[in-house]
Image (tube, rainbow, N blue to C red):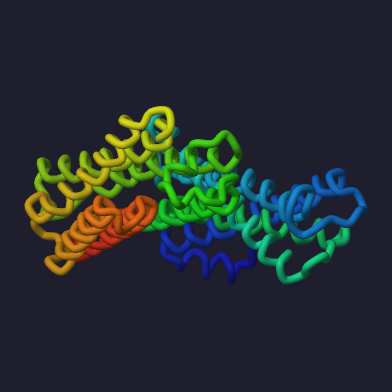
Length: 348
């Protein structure tokens, strides 16, 4: 670095220098990933052409490579913060949290690039990709995934974690619906996606288990410091969110065809925990925005009405489950945003 550059760097605030260092590290990691994935593609494809999507395609290779590199890059990002003292890894629970988030980032990369390749294949029907573009495209996809995952790890906060949770859950369930062996699964219920023994069922159940664990991670992170809330209130909010996460994971563990009553109990318990949280939130967190409270009450009311429509045979159970799931996780994201705003207002 030149003398002028060193002088400018010295004048930068510490936070800006840290962000610049992280950005440069992420860029270097992306470049390294590009080279590795492109080199590995040579023995995989040779100098042959490959289809855009499907088995043996450039899309499949890019998606798998991106999944692996995104997961490793996220773990590397958290370890980098650990070495810098910004986010210490204090025990086995932190390691498990990082592993779950790394898996989530890997799955998001896998599904995202698979979806991109399927869309491109639909636009370029019958087209194949030559060997040189295969190296460039697969390397670029993996590089972008590694870059984004590293920065996600470096800047992870409750708000970003909530977004990662939502994207992971949506993409995982969407992938299961598109690859389901039974095209009429939706005529029964959403849990039907997890009762077969194909890849679609495994993906669905794994999505629920990992998403449930992410909810518990979010519950612990989001409720560490909630302004205006007593210790009693914080514990109640955390317990409610953890209950939602644990029950969501158990829905993926206990399949509806083999453990019907357990599956039904944990699914219903998840809805009950959410209802209790929204109803008691004002008492547990007195400073929460009054405009936010009716949102939760309205969501609960909609879920109850939909359940009544299902009971009389007007709605299918699939519709009730989908709408209820969307409302619950929308509320969780909005809740985290409101807690973040409350923290910012208290700090000023």
